[in-house]
Image (tube, rainbow, N blue to C red):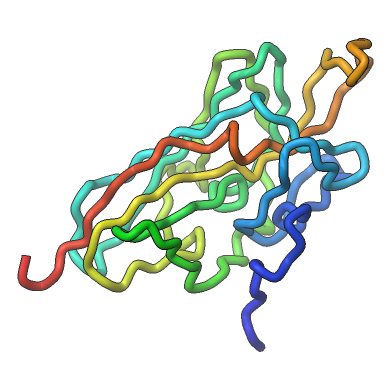
Length: 204
């Protein structure tokens, strides 16, 4: 069976998420929606609610050595947020570029553990939590669908694939919205820092 090419999916789809159940589950994806777009009934892509930060477990790797990332999600809004749980590679997507700035495509799609959903997270304004899987804070980039097989310089960042609820927002006319509002994180305002790594060749 051929692999699903997620780049052929419409841009308004966000990781095939079924938000209606109150739990997010589906296939990890790098396809995110634009700010202000509606991705599912009652869910709106909303900027300036959360932001990711990321670091790698090393700066220089030997070819074939596991590359692991640690991703933290921070509430940068004035609201108490309820974040739907999930594995790190289901709550964030990686962007990888080479030394020339060319995007490195995913080599595969990781699907197995993505169908496991975890407890939801409550994040107060200014607080953060680390995306974990089975108690582990460090995740191999292979879980995000990437395998770097050639030496060189690479840049890695993370973008959010996060859904949740927040209270107390206002509509376009400035009127208070009563009750929990469902959101999907915005890619541009939620994107993490960029981490630069090098994969050493045999002659290094």
